[in-house]
Amino acid sequence: MGVSLCLLCLSPRLQSAACRGEDRVLGPREGQGERPDQPLLRMTPSKSSKAPFTCLPSAFLGKKNFAQMKRAHLFVVGVYLLSSCRAEEGLNFPTYDGKDRVVSLTEKNFKQVLKKYDLLCLYYHEPLSSDKVVQKQFQLKEIVLELVAQVLEHKDIGFVMVDAKKEAKLAKKLGFDEEGSLYILKGDRTIEFDGEFAADVLVEFLLDLIEDPVEIINSKLEVQAFERIEDHIKLIGFFKSEESEHYKAFEEAAEHFQPYIKFFATFDKGVAKKLSLKMNEVDFYEPFMDEPIAIPDKPYTEAELVEFVKEHQRPTLRRLRPEDMFETWEDDLNGIHIVAFAERSDPDGYEFLEILKQVARDNTDNPDLSIVWIDPDDFPLLVAYWEKTFKIDLFKPQIGVVNVTDADSVWMEIPDDDDLPTAEELEDWIEDVLSGKINTEDDDNDDEEDEDDDNDDDNSDEEDNDDSDDDDE
Image (cartoon, rainbow, N blue to C red; front, side, top):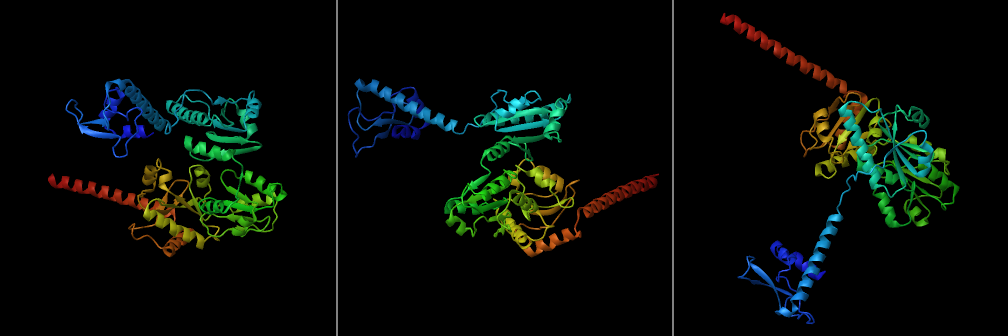
């Protein structure tokens, strides 16, 4: 390793000389140890070479050792090349290898395919069109699925396509009603994927789905990791053991929400004490909240836990995530969303997010308030679209109200990044939104007035031109 590191320190010209076997990079003499008062290599000027320096040993070697030196050179070069290959292989992103892994699902092969895998990923698509653009869009999605299937080939996951026209009977049997959707069959459950149709997002989603629905916490360090999860809904319960009937009910409830909502459990009294949990008690954590809600009336049945989670599934402040972005966007309040853009990695964005958290904590009991926080870094392909559609600058924090039907929007005036609104000012603005004082219809009226003004200006210009023509006559 020391020899290869020495070679890496040389100039490219000397490295190439070593690769050609020229007598420029030499090791210590065979059978002679290194002397502590002499460096292994010494750089000296060379007149016979174009290179400004030649690397010589501390003791000159005769011709009789040339063969040994050459073998040493080749060994060093081999180690160097091997280390270079390993570095490249360590960052070798997968590319589609051309092998077909996604198959067409029919009524005939359905049972056979279903038995073969623990998890079955189905893309329910419209009939193939003669339109070239539609064909390319379909091919792109097919390539995404093929790449995901290739990456997860070592997992027990199958990938299939269901043609809406050819397999209408099968689709009806499976309950598929939305063309272009991706469904996952896991046991007797059908999970619809409502996220970004991208290979990395799909891989992460499916890997989360094949894990156990409940994660066990056994130590104080794991408690710290649990507490740092702030942008997800999470539940944690304290039970006697994995064989407890109350834990089994908790585990079955977790399967209803996997992988979107995180369920944790502990059987350790020390962990339970740190989290202030009593036996068979479950705490519900809303995103970005400091304190949990203890689910009342313990112990619980599976149905009671599922019902409670569904009732509290819309947080006061929630993050738009690639894996469930469409589900979040479709969960609007009276056709609108209060949307906040803030880059967490940016100082101003971080400060604005902290203000949003404070507002959410102060208003967590308001069922009519739900703010969708979007970090533009999570959606680089949508930044230009959002800026054009909403007419805003996403290089600074923004908050507004958006109509989900036509994307009309009204945004709070934030004149300067250094003068962000306080929590009180933000609450006043939100109250005006919830009361209807600020709404997207006002924006429509403003646009109509602007259009009328533009038309009036055009008409006045035409009249002025007519008058000037008359004067010329």
